Amino acid sequence: MKINRTILLTLSLTIMTSPCWAWVAGFGSEALVTRQDLADKQTLYLAGYGLLGNREANGIHDDVFARSLYLSDDKNAVLIISLDAVGFSQTLGKRVRGALSEALLIPEANILLTATHTHSSIDLLGLWGSLEKEQADAITERVVTSGRSAVSSARPANLMLGLSHQGKGYNRRLKSNEIIPQVLSLNITETNGKPIALLFSFGSHPVVLDKNNLEITSDWVNFSRSQIEKELGTKAMFINGSLGDVLPSLDGKPSDVRTFEFAREYGNSIAQAVIQANSESRALNSHLAYCSEALPLKVDNFKVIALTKAVNNGTIDWTSLTDTSLSTTTSVLIIDKLVLMSVPGEPVTQLSQQLMAKVPNHDRAIFSLTHDSLGYLIPEEDVGREGGYEEVFNLNKRFGTDLSKSMDRLLKQCLGQSLITTN
Image (cartoon, rainbow, N blue to C red; front, side, top):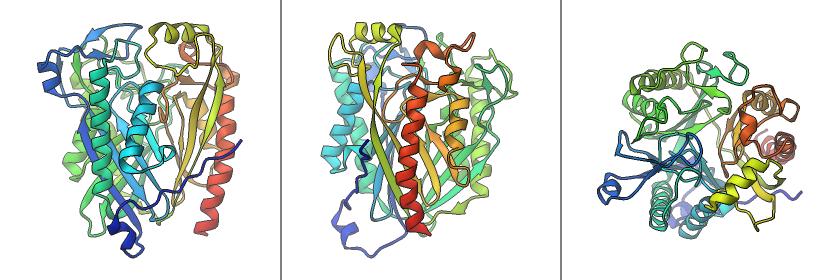
């Protein structure tokens, strides 16, 4: 299979004519939903619980965002965008990446569009209510504005990587406290130390608030970001990790507390893990490599096929009413010797452990719900587990295997390039 490895040319006259520096980075943020949207009597459907739930938002508890990070080593570059949403349809994802590419002259392949997976934000996936054309237009414009701010504000930067293993949660699939506790902190500053942004990642569902909540919120992620911003004085951006079977819990046991107060407590615990990781961080050398590839899939989960074809909201970009094939994207991003594996869905703990074991001698992490939002990702040998909830939204039994083989190809290409360049 042909590997798509694109090189992003520098984007401004200032960057093109400046001497080589360590890193170039910029950050942008834009609200996805505004109070004016509600004042204009728009119907905003909340995503995440049941099917075709049609929960209408009646207010905004905390702002939900499109947050963007532009990162370049002056040779290669990526634009990473995190949406406070349960996910996004393939149709909307293609539209947003196309608009960003046209506006910023960035190859679409170099745009990593992700979702935090909050279950209390506007439905961009198309399963819980319609997204009107005017709303899709506004969402696209706001995401582009966020990306444009990140690119236009790019300046010489330093990157500091921190890792802790203090993340907490409950594994509903294994009915235990076995999760991936790693919390990643990537602190980005100007060369004089002035803050640009801090990207953090950990795997856990933002589902403290349940279906009875009708206020727009990014759930515990809001409290994590706010605490990080308060204590470290920098903008915070979240990307979910190995979340597929992980629920918020402070003691590794099931929790039935569904309040904003518990969301604050849990979010603050993740923030403290990020702050600890940041305090023990190390500098990353200026080397960026990025590889991506198209991954074809044949869907055999007839419930998913029937549901997505019935709602007809572009959730999956089917080519025809009878077709059951689709294409998605996987990618590997190397930052110095940090390996970031991006997957188009929600990997369960066991699959993430297998993926991370492919690079045991490197710092590594999983970026979930990236490029696409295609349900749960399960190791093939564990599909059909008794009582397994994740099978309901698993596209096919081999999805995990196909994804794993894709990562093998990408790591061979991209990590090989990294080792040659940095050693």
